[in-house]
Amino acid sequence: MELPAISETAPVKSPPVVRRPGRTAMLAILASALTATASEICLKVGASETAANSVFLPWLGLSGLESKWVWFGIVLTILSFVAWIRAIRIIPLSLAFTCSNVVHVFMPLGCWWILGEAISPRRWVGIALVIVGLLVIARPFARLNEKLDEAL
Amino acid sequence: MTALLIILSLVTIVAGQLLLKLAMNKLEEFERGDPRRKQVKWIFASSILSMTISFFVSLGLLQKLDLSYLFPFQDLSVILIACCSAFFLKERLSMTLITGILLITAGVILVSSS
Image (tube, rainbow over all chains, first blue to last red; front, side, top):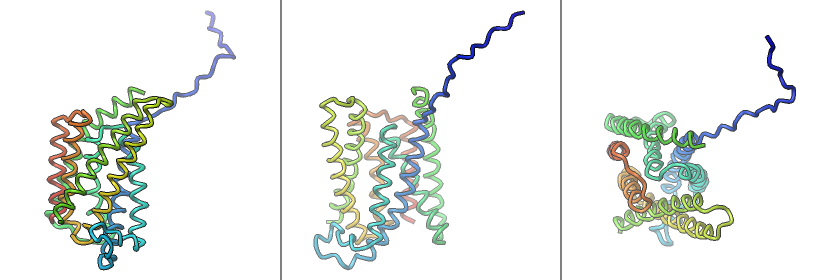
């Protein structure tokens, strides 16, 4: 029996470039939520520090710019915004914005874990509801991810 | 005055997000070199302007009010954005998504008010 000849010059196929837009969107939302949480905490600290300094257009909170915490908050907001743009280029706004509410789980958990703040039972119920809501929308999100991954 | 500022911060954040998504949609729609791509810059700039106004109004409100008082109002933006995305951007709102939005909003109100 003759074995098929193996051509030495057979073209070597490079593995296809794996692009996972669905996963990218999910990671972008997560990054955006984490930076937004940090930013919100920095802004609150900065705003409280400078609350007494408001002279010019007090309702705009411009005196907050005197605090370094507000500037940290602004940098984090920009980072969060860049990640957010990455996400909404890929998935619908209604889905992305709803998923971004994971920030309400991160914020109290972060305060509990890092700052040792107590979480009341009512707040735990709220966190659980947000998680359930996120799990409910995880299904359409996963379906959309599959569609996006198949399309490429 | 506080109520007006809360409404202003809500309207500007919703408008900003919608304009940003519109800009991203147009960016995908028009190919590189298409003259219509210029309008994307303006839509993007309007979205940044709208979100900047919302940022400073919210900062001003944070100086006067507790975060826990302010958050439930800000969370109305989830419902508003979902409705406006369906209306203006023709996005499809499935029953699953609506259920998720309502659960999350209820949860966020509980988190913020406790």
